[in-house]
Image (tube, rainbow, N blue to C red):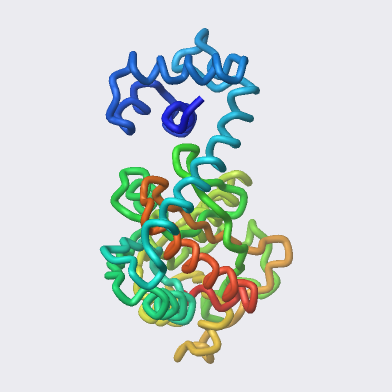
Length: 305
């Protein structure tokens, strides 16, 4: 058994096929298949079900995959720590974040990163969750912070850890006529002013209404938080906003918080990292430690929209 054999198993399980795993590892398909066979011989168990197309991991294969991920992560961390003292890590750190994360939630971890790794050059990319996941999978980002609708999970092909769960409040202009104590059916009768498709909160609302077989009408799609709330205050539709952001909103006196006891829009914040980024394991760990600490202090202060 060797590390390359473990890498082969992880690649097959995460990409879902021998072909995709071969591309990830830059190997021929026969070479990758041989690595899997050597690993199976070493552990004395069948790890892939070759009767399925594409091959799926057996029960033993899933167990081996989980162990392999941990082993490879430990090896990457060891190599990183031995190769470069913390203050000497150089190069680019490509960080992807979803729109509308609060300034505090991003600024403090980045400041911590720059203090701990002063020679690191940070490149920030802002995009919606599906695009960030794709960029991590394509090795274009070293780390991505994004949100998914409560109950959704990241795709199987990328590694991910959950940071926290957070909620928003629904707001509307009193003139729109939405009942203050609104049911899901009540909400479905009114238009919405929301972020673009790909926003975790929008997806949560869409899934909830669709599962209840109720209509979902997005009247205005806009990214700007301030403009969005001005349009909601003008009566163009129901909006959503983080509690802390509402407290600072210039339109708050023209908005009514809707009491929806059976409908609490929520998302979970996730982090996904590029497993091939060996030298950046320490910066990634430092960044994640900091944002977990912030989320633990106040999960309602994560979003600015």
